[in-house]
Amino acid sequence: MINVILIDDEPLARLIVQEYLQAFANFKIVAQCDNGFEAVKAIQQHNPDLIFLDIQMPKINGFETLELLETKPAVIFTTAFDEYALKAFEQNAIDYLLKPFSEERFKKAIDKFLATHKIEISSTKVEKLLETTGKHQDEAHRIVVKNGSSILILPINDVMYIEAYDDYVKIFNKDTFYLKKKTMAYYEQILDAQQFVRIHRSYILNINYLTKIEPLDKNNALAILKNGIKIPLSKTGNLKLKEILNL
Amino acid sequence: MQTEKFVSKNQLLIFISSWFIVCGLVLAGTLFQLTANVKLATIDAAISVGLTAIPLLLVFFMQNYLPNFLNKISTQFFLITLFIFKVIYLQKFLLPYVYNPINFNEVYTKTEILRIFIVFLQTVFFFATMWFLNNIKTKTKQLALQQQAQNTLRDAELIKLRQQLQPHFLFNSLNSINALVGSQPQLARSMIQNLSDFLRGTLKKDDNKLVNLEEELKLLHLYLDIEKIRFGHRMQVVFTIDEATNNFKLPALILQPIVENAIKFGLYNVLSDVEISISAQLQNTHLILEVKNPFDEDAIQTRKGEGFGLSLIERRLQLLYHRADLLSIQKSNNIFITKLIIPQHD
Image (cartoon, rainbow over all chains, first blue to last red; front, side):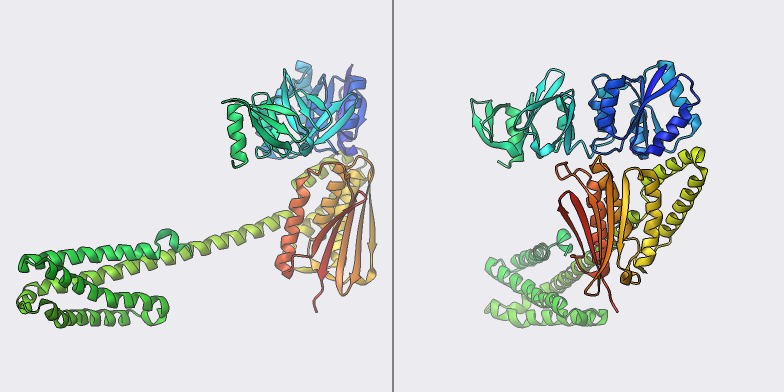
């Protein structure tokens, strides 16, 4: 038996998938979710083999929902996205159903899933997808993180700095930090370059929190933040920072 | 304006002056060979070339300040001829004082043709330059006009675009219909009807046409019926319409995009149920429309779409009423209010 979860904020959009799925005897819908928050919970609970995922949803979008999952099930996106975005889907070999979609097209997607039994969807693929679709407007303004079992949406202006941490990054706000499985290059690309500056191989700084640059020696300096935290500044980082601050 | 980018007035003066200096040097050289007197040759050349410059500068300034007078080619021709003769006559009249006591007449006879030729060259060059500059000016003006026309066209298109259906809305509606066909064919039919009527309503609308509020609300209801089928499980719409406003005029399709905005904003910003309220009231002969939707004050406002939609509406209102204060927004207690003031004429 193949367990399936449908995630879409429109009940009728879930209904059509449900209807099409009736033709496949060994597929069982174990949950239907209205939004990403419910979806994360339901996926952890049911551990489904396949999810149908809408992109535009309340609070957090489909991509962000996917990012929050530690083990990702096979995904088939259902979307009314524009052509440009679809090209990106194709290039990254992520399966999608373009609303409205026919039963034949649906069967093809299912066949593809059955053939591999896993429609591969790594976070690098989603990252690449986002890069090719341009800065996704949501991503540039907020970062969705998980804190234990709860989901937090961090406004980008609250992020003080980002620090590289093996395969993860640590995202610091005033009080604490959150881990996220992303690369520094990803954030460097997606965030506003006038506000978030890669000042060091391992640091991206929100310049709104900078109060002072303290030189250490010829090549190195320290950036001192408003709450006193000091983070290292490389030579190129220093130059970049000075250029943005018009020094 | 943009002419300065090609040739500035100073550049023009330097250009013409250097040409005049070249003319002067040619004349001075010839005179030096004849008289073997540097001082005399220089003074003569300076006076001769300078004398031509004075009337030409006069023409230059007249062209700036009395353009109509000089626009006629016959006038220009007359003036040029007059100047040339005047200049040659003046040279003949003034220069003897410089050459005194040396015999000027002998020098002059030998250089007369060169002098006439140089005056002629100076004049021709001067007018050629002026003509060239004028040409550039006209072309630049034409270019600027073309650019302006293009900008206006683009603005119009932008506004038109906003009025046309959001492709997202269209495709998602078709998807809903697809789902309904199997389970509730009657509802599918009515949704197709609503969608078609709404589409037709938006297509035939003229940008600058004013319609009755009643008509605009009819179209809005068609739109809302579709959205209710899609999101009815978590969305209610409440109308409070003052009957007296039914015949009030407003620009076609100005309310619908605001409501569309409010719905999107509401639905994607909160997880709970969403109530959209729409009201129309009378205030000092103005029509006041308000659209309210819930939003999460703590959430990060990322939906740039609403800014875009509203700024286009603002621009439309500005074009129609020449006022920038007709659209306003207000946020309080997790309610987002878009307020629209529509002045009523006649």
